[in-house]
Length: 80
Image 1 (cartoon, rainbow, N blue to C red):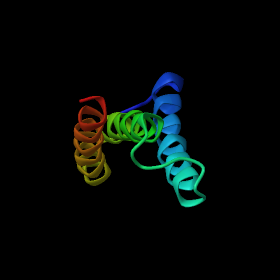
Image 2: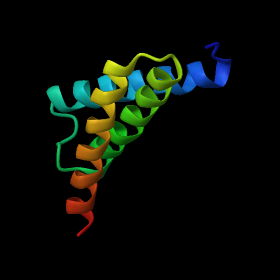
Image 3: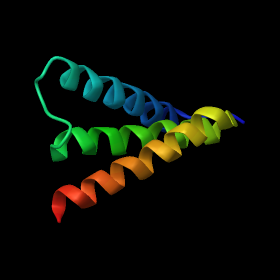
């Protein structure tokens, strides 16, 4: 299946967001309990899930779907 530029941007955003969140956490710039960290994980995982599913690469799609759920649960815990 062919992807367009918007699909690619979504996928690349996802990769950058996840790696960026991990980098910020690893260098103690942000904490894992912060909303920004979890939002980067959530939106990044959604982006990677989307492009992976679109390209029919189901292993990273499944991995990032789980990553999305984990981030959602963490966000709910932060907000309540």
